[in-house]
Image (cartoon, rainbow, N blue to C red; front, side):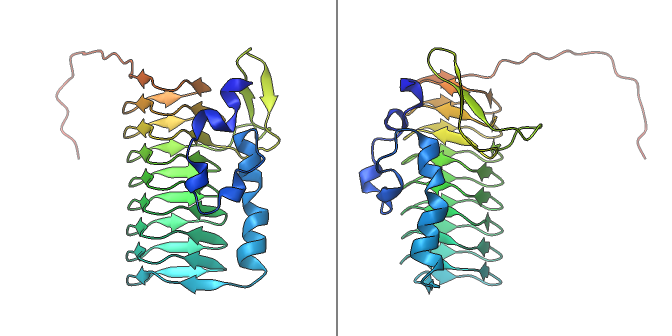
Amino acid sequence: MENLKLNYYFKHTDEFEHKELFENCTYPWEALAKVTPMLEEKVVKPDLKINNGNLGEFVSIKGNYIIGEGTQIHANVSIEGPVIIGKNVTIQSGALIRPGCVIGDNCVIGHGAEIKHSIIQNKAKVQSLTFAGDSIIGKSTRVGSGTILSNRRFDQKNITVKNSKGEKVDVGTDFFGAIVGDNTRLGANCTTLPGSFIGEYTWILPTVQIRGFVPSEKRIFPVSSTRIEENPKVELK
């Protein structure tokens, strides 16, 4: 199961302010499982509502939260706690931050993006109109506009992933998105199916659909074909 281990994807967890999420974890889904208890202990029980950032017009914040210094939250952003948002983060207009998010320092969350129960490590960017659910995004990783990190199977069964031997491993939950390694880049309008694992320094070019495991330091191209036929003249209403 070497290709599923946490340290294959993330080499900078010691730099993350909430590095305890990764401590004593062998696999990434173990770190995700620690998010809710950590937020309960650090944010919910003390009933914290700390904002050291700057809020634009019509920002809605509910529940418990910590927002770090220098963070800029633009107009019409919705934040549903419990969440922790780090320092010098930019959250652009219309974004939705749902419960269970831990966002590191110097990150960017784009216009209209939706983040749910995810760990976003330092310097990562999740661009406009993107969805990331139940995922971990590595340091300095870029997730392009319109990308979907989908987090639930159609049949709502537990997510399974394949190890290096091709054996299926049950991650123990029916909500599990993508593990995206450090310094990786996903182009616009990519889709990752639930339980996708993408190694560090890999580039996924625009419109590619990812399923399963993608090794580190790879470049993935879309394969497409088109067909051209004659089209009658039709006057549209």
